[in-house]
Image 1 (cartoon, rainbow, N blue to C red):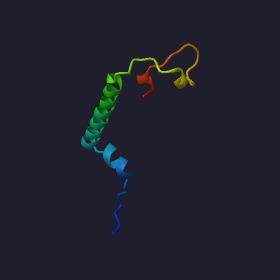
Image 2: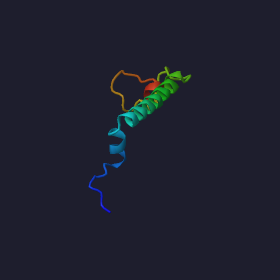
Image 3: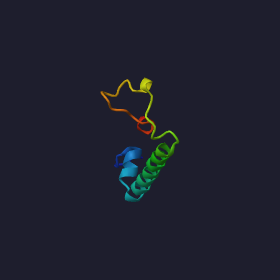
Image 4: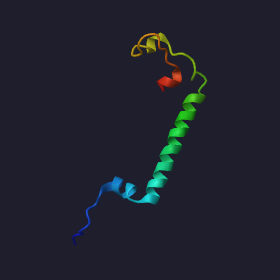
Amino acid sequence: FESEEKWEGASGMILGNAEWFEAWLQGEQRFAEEQYHEIISASDAWLVAGAEEEQDVPGDLKATHSARR
C-alpha cells in the first residue's frame, strides 16, 4: 500500500501542527530562561574573568564569568 502523501519528517510534523509547534516553542523558551537565570544567578556571574580566559577578547574589554557561560 503506497500513500500519496509525502512524509515531511519530524520537523514537518511539529512545525506543521500549530498546537504542537506552540508546545515545542514554549518548552524551548522555558529551557532558555532556566539556563539564563542559572547563569546570571551564579555567585561568580558578575566577576571579571581571569586574564588566562581573555585570549579572544580584543583591547580593554573584560568579560564576566556569566558572559563566558
